[in-house]
Length: 460
Ligand code: NG1
Image 1 (cartoon, rainbow, N blue to C red):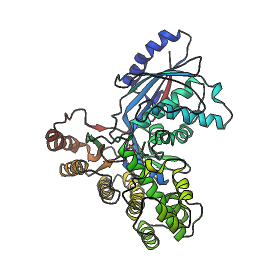
Image 2: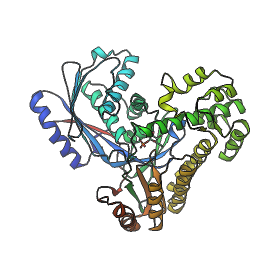
Image 3: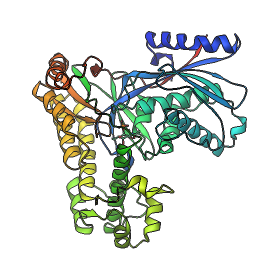
Image 4: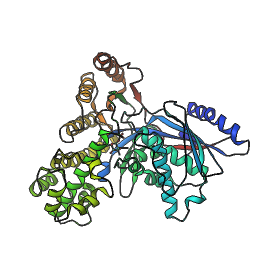
């Protein structure tokens, strides 16, 4: 993490945000600024929470925080976007969350992650100082571009900096990876890793358990058009339940496969892949079809009895102490086979995509993205008619490939184009999508660039 991660307009933004803090804290106080970008995922969707690889890029849209330590254990948050009200709270070993949907829960989630990490290593929360944080988020929200990771990562970095604590980017990524469990999303660690480890002009091949990332150069003739459907994927409501339900479905598929293939210690589909030499998606899906019903009753009792466990034990394994009602809509069956088919085939596509990008084979990369979208729509049931419409429009206008990006259920699409074709793709989306829905297009779609990961500077 260094000031090379910043462009000059971001440094100007940070300096302006810090002025009020400097005036209040005095000339001797140490002031810090952090930036953390959002991300767009090229391929590898709904694989991270199964411990399987992903291929995102950090984007040139970021959240910036200016920060100074306070003497007490008070944390005070001021958001430059006045839609998000000021918040003040006290540090504690377990910080109680605000009501669901409050923006400041993402900051609390990050601070809780830091507190847990250092408490486990002998630094008690009573030795940590609070902080005043001024926050300016420029990653569009609800658009599948990880505004939440930009906020959790920047909050964790700001809080560590004001406390004189430092970790490597990869350690920080591991620390914040599961911070969104605090807000009730059983998310994987892709977003935080991309935000911390991103590199200019590169995608990141990220693997989990243990977390590691390898940069993959983006071919210079490639352009990424990212377009927001303006159908908000609201992670604090229904979409959260849909997302968490997918996590449970994939976890169940993993447990059935573990039994069928006599593998020990399996918690997620990634453990199955690691346990089988020379695996391929078709064989694993066939093995699952032989051992488990295509879909299961949603109350977990049927799954538990087939797996030889009590319902309580299975629920505890899958959900920890979460209320199953938050996760499972009790009226719809759990899909096992389709979800596993998506995750295994998507993993094959990620590995092929890394090779295609490295070799500059853009048409092949585009075809893999198209196939990913089809699999997300048909097997993962997370596309919408508006996302499908945008994807088709981008392809007709010359994109080499296009797919929903992020969790889906709304949010954005990403289209891979040759740079010369990007203006035509944008024009087609404006004409055929945005204007028919009367959405002003200028702020909804853009060519985004692979940017550097998070950075920290001390301000003069
Ligand atoms: P988005 O929709 O961008 O927040 C979510 C998860 C990721 C990953 C993708 C699907 C959160 C915070 N992040 O991303 O970890 O699972 O969905 O690939 O929920």
